Length: 137
Image (tube, rainbow, N blue to C red; front, side):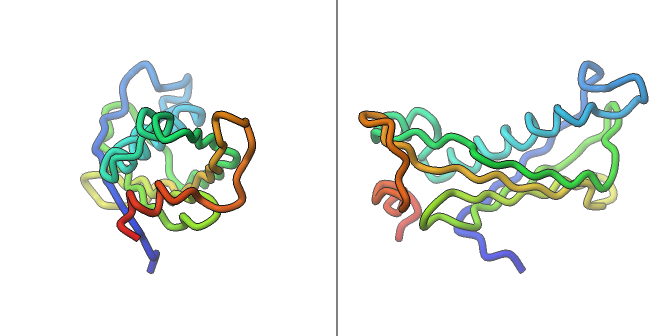
């Protein structure tokens, strides 16, 4: 079981313009689906891009891993679930993509972000207190 400090789910329908010649979603679009879920997750703790910038920090993604277990097809309804699983030294968000109809897991992924102090452009080795406050810790 994943230890989650915050979570969010979204539902999407795979549009025509995301499909490649094989009739499945091009692999690069998966990052977009994860990004949408991540935005909803960060909105749920009131610490998305605008709030991050206002607090003096940027949080660039430094790593992404995606495991493509099942193809996504045009008009398929999917659910993207995002869990914040690490926060102390970095943000690690774990994702799972499911078929909305069958609940079959189609994709597993994660992203890692680190705090960067905007004023100095320096990377921090521990998450700033503002994040802990947003998580209620």
